[in-house]
Image (cartoon, rainbow, N blue to C red):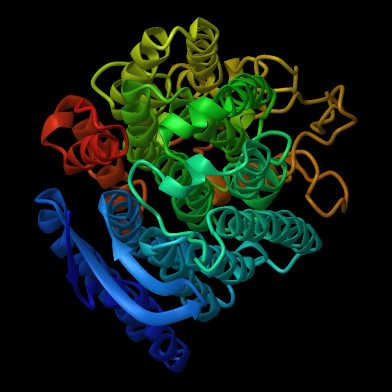
Length: 575
């Protein structure tokens, strides 16, 4: 590879940081504020995209900012693995910027200026992670990402949001300490008398690590994997992620399906491919341990997802599972599994972003968050739920959607390496994916409110709550088996516990909040976008289309080309 001195990696990092100032200055002018956001997103994506042809041709773009600490340069480096993450994050930030406008205005959210400013800062940190040239620079941006995303996690300013924020900080800062400790240990073991150590990334691993004491090398690997594993939500370090779903849905979508959690798996990819290298990971025997943890996580979190009635929490535990697909592919070390794991980074991002966008649209338009309340909602939100169905198929590994291609490489990679146990774990998790996504799609399109079955499929939470209330002879409502409290939207009792409301008020509340007609059924909306604003529908359809493109024509999608280049550089094998 040819290294080219360029300011483009630095510009890609700084553009969203610089735009924070005009965003804050435009507090009283929302149109201008959001124009700054979109301008920064377009500029960032253009800068990253401009480096893709050169990287595919074998060039590496480097911005050297001087010495960080003795022997360590503070440099930004756009290599194939960095471009994979940077291109994905910048592309989907642009999409999410439009979605955020529709979401925040649709709910008339407070502190919108702070939201957009924190979002810009978060993407700046994510880009720094993508283009970090060594472990110490990566650590700096890894910690900055935590700081920048904290206001987004606690955006609602409720007790629940603050508690989730404190937990998020405790977990992620703890992981950062582990990353720093591991980086220092790598620097120490790669040094020699009179020769400083290194933490610089090198395709195939740092050569000096192969000669290090195996005990210290294993300790460094463990510290780094644990540190990055926090944001990758490996069990038992995962519980911050479902709690962080209290954040606005665009935050859940981009940061918890793309930037934050992907920074964790990206860090693990750097450690496996560019710090230790696949050969040394295999010689140390640490790959199989990491693979076992990933296999356990992807199966158990899928089982937990079955028990979640809240849609965002079900998606959160699905994310925990899907991230472990990536880690498993990296840990198995077979070139085919490496392709599958790395390709699952963009595949999962497009699919999960679609799912979170759909969940957010349902919340904005109907205030519906629980699966047990979604019977027939496909009539009210046809395009949204169709996109949800497409992404759900991909998450389950059905052909023609992105998830099938990445999981195919993972399966043949585990089989080729002799890891049949891991193959079985992938297959079991795939079945569980169908089990926890199918009820959502079936409920939305094939059930009516009065006929809804209890959801979810494991824990019998009462469902079918939109049926007309039973009426006593005097015209009043008869109490049901939940003592008159039917749900949290005030159909039988209001949310504040102010007493039972009459049928007319309940029906009016349903129509206001959920778009039901007087018969308490979802009103029909045509397939022309009448269900929501195009600020939200456009990004939903774009992300769903991306999922299909990656599944139908993967070889023409640039992400697969970049992944093949990364794997060839790390293993010397062309896949």
